[in-house]
View 1 (cartoon, rainbow, N blue to C red):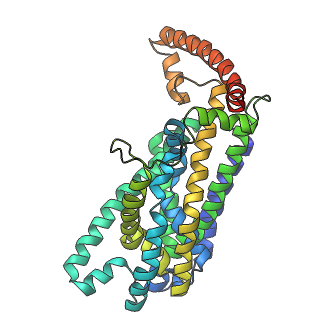
View 2 (spheres, one colour):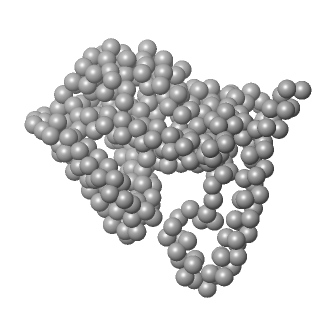
View 3 (cartoon, rainbow, N blue to C red):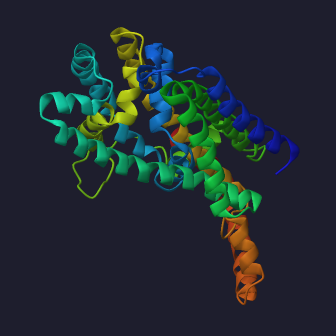
Length: 353
């Protein structure tokens, strides 16, 4: 990592943590802590909801999904806007009328305290496991890049998150999520620019799209009823709808975001914002993955992307075999690059006939 990388990494971490602590100082009661004093506007709610669902795993794994399988994964989110409509019209008015502070408080009112306790425990277990994975994923990346011990990075990242969430409560999470979304999406746009800039000068953006299309990476819609296809329009509308309805409507990590709104209208607008922009955001993240695929049609692909693993192989008993495979891969990549350069031209000839 260079100086600019360290500057961006450290300044972002320090700013987000420091800003979250400073902005949320002085929380004196449970309403301030759990609901952020009910001061969040619709933009804060919308960005916080998106950031809560779109963790580091989304931005690390989703481009890889498109790299291997193309854009079809975006169909998984087609049911989300429909779920947002139901939550806006049914769930939010219900929560607002009952003046609850958590989703599980409603269950106590409807059933009993045992039901509330059970669902709260299940939520804490589920969220604890999910949070562990969310912290573990970027820790793996930083460990590979920095060469630091993985366990140390898990402790450091987890400690920073605990620091500002415990000290500031929901408001700290809401205000820092806004900054995180701007940083993450800004990074995605920068990555997209660098990928396109890294293509050969004779390969235009249109050529890159042709290569991606001919490789089957731009097939977005699948209206088939083939049960072997994991992501289709129908599975997205049905399965995606019920999954989003349960997650955004009953999971406290999401419900807490819009319960902290200034009013019922602010909460509804925040979820409407999420319903409108979630699919375009996921589309762009997947598209970045497709462009990574095109990028590696013209740039050398390592046998293993983890630099630590490559170093270990080079110093192991399998060094000779590794070097032989690397040489073979280089020859294959050079041949593939020549074939890919001719693909847009041959595609244009077929189209003109």
